[in-house]
Amino acid sequence: MNITKDTAVTLAYKVTDEKGAALDSGHLSYLHGGYDNIFPKVEALLDGQGLGFSGAIGLAPVDAFGERDESLVQTIPKSEFPPGVKVGGQLRGRTPDGREQVFNVLKIKGPVVMLDGNHPLAGKTIRFQCKVTAVRIASAEEITHRHVHGEHGHHH
Image (cartoon, rainbow, N blue to C red; front, top):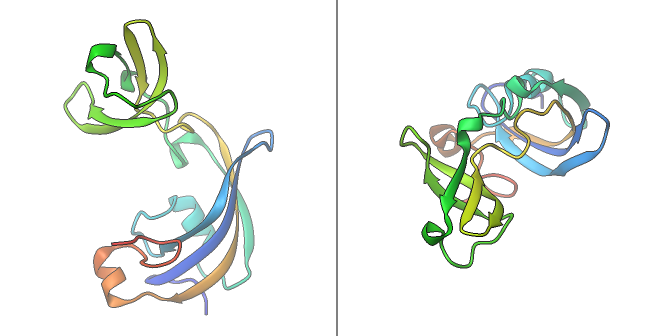
């Protein structure tokens, strides 16, 4: 079976930086066909391919995790910081324009905590390598929900 609209695709993947240093790897499943479950350029690379296909593509920041937005770097008083969260942890907060955002805790120094709402790979050019390990027709429920369910997919 080839990868076409409304197929559930499972990949083994590896993400590296421009110099080839490993950044992430694992398995993921996504619903193919413009559902925004995977980077559009990766989806285009996989369109029409079948089980066992291996490919790689370089992605500029705009095609991957986006450019860094320095307005998402915030410093808050430690008194407003929830107990138990440490450097490297995450918490939900609000952007300057009021949108809810997940922030990574960068630094705790004295009376202040530095938070960053950017994805850790924002602003970086990456290389996405993958191998197709499964392709199947998506269920009606997956199409309605706009994502794959089950192993390596979304769990309700």
